[in-house]
Image (cartoon, rainbow, N blue to C red; front, side, top):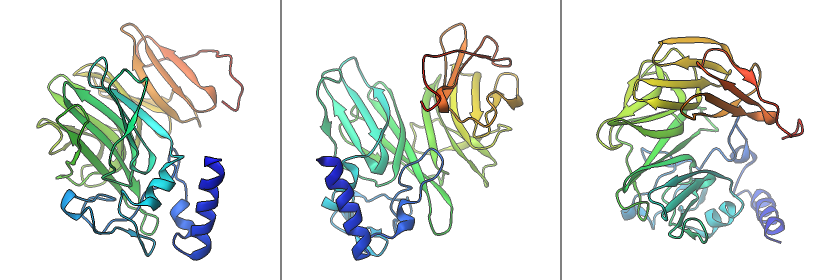
Amino acid sequence: MTATMNSAIRLLLLAIGILDSTAFAQLPGDALPGVASPLATPGIVSPQLATKSLAVAGAEAPPNSKLVFALADDASLNSIGMASEDRLCAVGDRGLMLASDNAGHTWERLPAITTCNLRAVAFQGNLGLAVGGLVGTRVGISQGVVLRSEDAGRTWTVANSTPLSRLRGVRFIGDRWLAWGDFHPALQTSIVESVDGGWTWRGVAADIGHATAAAWTRQDNGLIVDSLGRCYRTSLKLSQEAISANLSIHNVLHDGQRWWACGSHGTCLVSVDGLTWEDVQLPLSAAA
């Protein structure tokens, strides 16, 4: 019933011209690209402006409006972060944020402060960062968003003092936060770092395009994969040919001994050194 109602709401909005078709144009790896905002940070509304509206293709809809809530009812969840053994936060498309205080048995929906797609969330103690962004449907500019929490994800604020491209991941490594996503022309990199808890960011040199996945074993030993499947080892300062030609890699990790990479169409790869990779056969169909 919910899916049917959401479909009906979308069709109704399209019919009366509140949303045009470009608002639903999908980009690789994304659902809705986001809602345009007149503020400096895309899709963000500050607490003082919570009652004021954001432009949604000519209509008015602040992040906590019934319209945004209706569209977020079937939004995809993209990441879960753990602040403690019991405290979890999940983020998803259209600014969706959920929280649990009992290790995921029950969840509550948090107030929305952005309509951008949130792609990742991570914690270091009570300090949490959630990242994402959008690509403008009219001008095609990639814009990132960083949300920050100091109370284990109970409340969130905007931390975008540095203009960033759309971000796809974030992680605390050593004494800094690292985030990755679309290539930033001004910074000439797709990897950024913060040493002040996510308030400001600077570029990290990496000879790679749009970064779709990354993992680190320690501060100076990371593996980053771009949208073409090319791999970059930060400790070796080199890139290589695609580890999975024509298939998107969405996640990588290190289990203490080996690197693992997984992506579209059931792709799963394993490597000891991050340079040579082997396919892992999974009991999945080609459509997985």
